[in-house]
Amino acid sequence: EHLIIIIRCFFVINMLLYLYDESNFALLSNKLSEYTFYDIAHFLDLYVQVEKIKLLDNCDDVYLEIFCPKKVWDITRDAILVLPGGGYIYLSEKFEGEPVALSFASKGTNAFVLHYSVGRKRRFPQQLIEVAAAIKHIKDNHAKYNINPDRVFVTGFSAGGHLAAMVSNMPGEPISRPDASILCYAVLSANPELMHSGSFQNLFGCEPEKSVRDQFSWPEVANADTPPAFLW
Image (cartoon, rainbow, N blue to C red):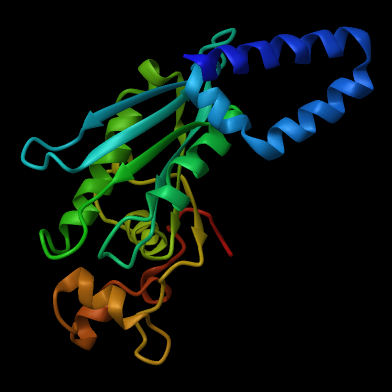
């Protein structure tokens, strides 16, 4: 409670500085953003509504975490699904989940973090099913989340980048696929000379044969119908 009072006082001081001197306000705002801007917004629920929903009935540990900026003038926003990495053995949501979602949300994009299956509990293609279900949920509920259903994107890190790439090429209805992707230091190739073998072993539970590897190697399956992708 004391922390909340202190933070609220800080915002009051911030506004007073703005009224007094815009240059002081800009300096203080920059310092604040470098320090704990996203944490403050999260604590006070000033800008972002946070919600968690379970996606699949038989998987209690698989859920979608939603970071939606509060409605302002009924602006329709873009949406992005965030897939943390972790080599398919764990989820690095501390660094590649919530901080990424809050960054997008602070810029007016509705963000969703999928906590998908990892480790030995559930093997492939369970992860692909979960991501497709997440994208379908977002698009089906576009009115609730105030988003454009034709601008639902996905970003993934490391193994999450592989999952993002695979769901982009998944056969089936477009409602289960993203409209574009951002692949961040992603595990894309299943070529033995280039692949991150640990990720594929964790995904399949064994060393996959070449015929299987090729089906889940993004350079092999990407084609003219693959949604636009930004790689870094």
